[in-house]
Length: 484
Image: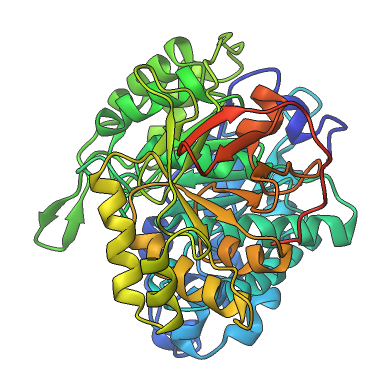
């Protein structure tokens, strides 16, 4: 049966417990290549060929009390299915996976305990920041996947195991487009994976992830995979202190160790329950579960420990900030004004303009690096020049600076269409200015622009070319931003 309480309502009232590892349990079955339709290792295809074992896996977690399960659709997107040459089946596989989970959830739902379905969206193998696939291409396939997940009955979209902030952005925007097209208020959860070195695979710190993803209008931010709960603790503490939206975590059963038959995860069920006890009682997390190596027994003990617990009140310190791929930079500096590097401005720097006109992109990047060494906090990127294709120049430079610059970008142009290629190549949260007035123009409500602006200052930032410092400016007229 379906309960009238929505997942969004439940998330605002109590701790919700999700499921554990899907792939581990599916792979425990003795399946031959025919049951994968020849696509070895593609668990998602089992939604079509062996829905019974997918259903049994969901049931195993519902049996121990989990409130929700993830769909078997981790690879049902372009990056996952392209490897097998079946990317055109994205919707089919996603819808089937969600439908199986929905049917199982409804079978276990009671008036006292509704059951929910999280539509799983994995990262795939194509990282847009590295140029593996265009942002817009990935975005459109993620929209297709989200459409199938929502049609199949998902209560939320879970974008998980994220390694590249631009990939997350593509998935979030795609999910929001599907949600809008279907007229469904489905929450969107974004979970990043932090490696043992303390950053995402692309080098992003947790602060950069928060500053970049919160403006996109996600409902929950969190961590999953890569490590166990011990390695996630400090990153969750940061989110607890700074995130204005609910937080989730789904750790592995510890760090993997190499055994005779592959990776082995040694974190005990009791240890996972202990960790979630701390995360919910001290850090105020709303959604907990498990990832690689976590079994129904792990989740049974988590359910016994934290299920239904009231949410700990958090008072996050939300800082107005912009972000690069790597780090978040607060607008208010403790010991200085916010210094904006203006030498990457074709109207203000002859050296940069000549390098851009010659399409000497390496020299343009080196000019940016010089400003980083000189102590700038933000780089102003202005590509406006009469007779030049500003869209192309912005595309060339923003894509290079996305990985070459550790600082956030200020996209500076008199032509708003020139901003769009910057947004599509810049994973993080920049802000945009009109160079004729040098005053930042604010986002329209709901746009994927500056969360720091709309939720903290209520006023735009002004960049002053003569002093290279940023200051708060009085409210000014705002224009709509092109959609990303």
